[in-house]
Image 1 (cartoon, rainbow, N blue to C red):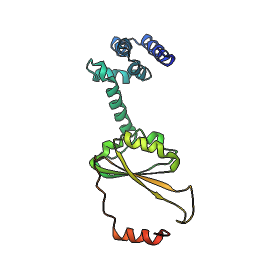
Image 2: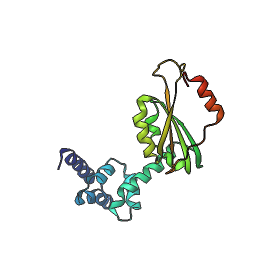
Image 3: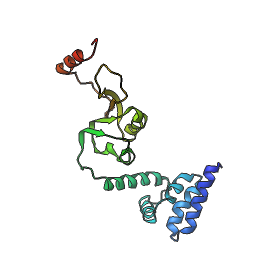
Image 4: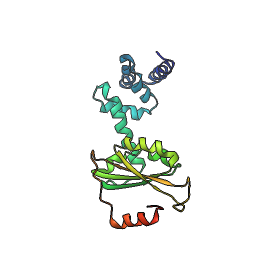
Amino acid sequence: MSTSSYKKARKVNQRINELEDNGLKWLLQEPLDTGDITPGYNLSNKPIGFMQEVHDQIDGEIGNVGKVINEIEKAEIKKEIPLPPEKYQVIYVEYGQENHEQSSQIPLGDYGEPDSVLFLWTTPPMLGHFLKLIQQWGFQYKTAFLWNKNLLNKVSARGELTLVASLLRKCRMLQRPDAGFTMSRTKIPGG
C-alpha cells in the first residue's frame, strides 16, 4: 500500500470511529474492505447529511457510490449557481481567471440541446484548462479563432481565443458568409 493510500485509509477509519450510524459506517468501511479506498475517502470529507443522502440513493450497491456522489454534487451546484432551466442551441461563455474555478463546476453540457454549439472566450494562458473543461462538460472541441484587441498588423499577447465546441459527434462546417470573407480579404495583409 502506498503512503498516500495509507493516509487515506487512516482518514476513513478515523471518520468511521466518529460516526454513530451503522449504515454510514458500512458506507465508509465497505470500500475499504473491497480494496477501493477512493469512495470511502471521498465520503469521509462530506457532512453527515450528504453521506446519508448517498446511502439512501445507492440501494445497497457500493459500486454506485462514485456515480451517486457526482449526481448529488451536480445537483448542489445547480442550486448554488442560478442558471435558466431551458436547453440551448448556442451557449456563450466568457471566463476570466478570477471566476473559472467556481464556474468549472457547472454541468454546462446539461443545458445544451443535442446539437448545441459552445463558444468559450478565454486567454492563451488558460487554454489547457478550458480544453479539459470542454470535455468535462460533455462537449467536443472543434476549432478556435483569435480576436486581437490591438491592430491586426501588430504582435500582442492581449488576444483572446474563442474555443468552439459541439455536443454533436459530427459537426458540419457552415459556409462562410460573403461579407465575412470580403472583410477578411481586405483587412488581413497579403490576404
